[in-house]
Length: 522
Image (cartoon, rainbow, N blue to C red; front, side, top):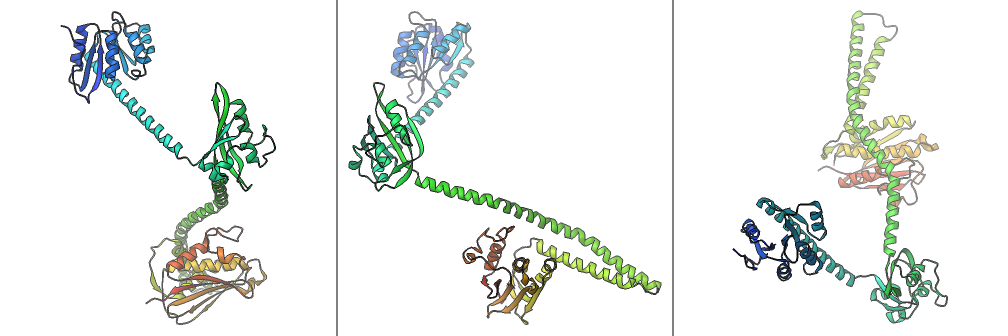
């Protein structure tokens, strides 16, 4: 049975496979193996016919016998790969030649695989499917590359970089509109000028092989491409501007006949770099402060646990002191040594320590943000008790001046305590090393109007910096050597969130007066 050199299946969307073998039986087996699998099968009985069909039909894959009369498979493969029209066709050799050197020779001619005869149908199917998948991927990649090249061409056509064309002497033969816009010269003014002399600001001095523009001269003389960063060009008014540029020689008969200079103004880039460096420097300066904030946060969590643990032995001390006092009473001993009084003092101080710890626990815990109707005087009194330890450590007094009969305010008491405590501690720190420390810090409460109660914290410290009005409530602004610059910012945000205002003024006799308002409860 002889097979005609014609396509077996006729579906245009099917992938084409060319079967080449001089043995009709082998062709028949291959046809039966690959039929019904969605391929368009073509056949050829010799090398010349295979080349002709391949050139016309452009199959995706060729199953090619090696041992054929006339032109063997090696020569067919070589010619397929040599022709631009067929070089992308995938070739798999089918041969009884099983020697390694035969396989190597087949791969060297351009084949991608080698199937030994007699072959198994499953092997042929698997290898064909694999190579066709690879072929599809290569086609997709090639199409993508073509698309990218087209995109690249469009980008180059619309580029905003300045372009100068130079002749062998460095004279400008053409300039694009971007080059004219960036330099300030018209294209007519640029044409015919020596670029190096123009950009050096001296049209009479010959160009030379030194300086930042020397690479242009080197490119013109030696025919090598040069790229330069952070050079300087001139505007038409003589003012300099920073540029990055590249110079590519135009070669004719292996010799440079000119060059193309592509440049871009990097003024904005340098400004951004300077701004970025400034931000990095600021970030570095704040790094330790933020680390300290993290440590404070950790200490706050530890303080809550510490207060819980210490509160238990303090309760035990108070209880034991009461028991000891009752035991002394039952013994009816003469208390010449004052043991009963001592036990009472132990009990009193243990309870006082417990109250301090309770206030600390209440202050450092993270409650829900809940607004309530609160007595402002009681709120400030509780804050005063929290600040007592700092006052003793600084050998300073806190004076409370509270207007009686103040209406309740609608606030979150813990957050307002945070604000008041921060202002009081700031006042004490401002007076710590001054002669005015004996005056102490004054805290006043008063009704401002029908809508607000005002709290004033007054110190006689060193006062505020000259630029305080602009920067005081800005994050990370501080005048303290070990300050973090976030306390007043947080206070400002808290008071604003309550609908009040946090303000300050310089004390006429030195120091600062901070005032914040709280809305009166309905």
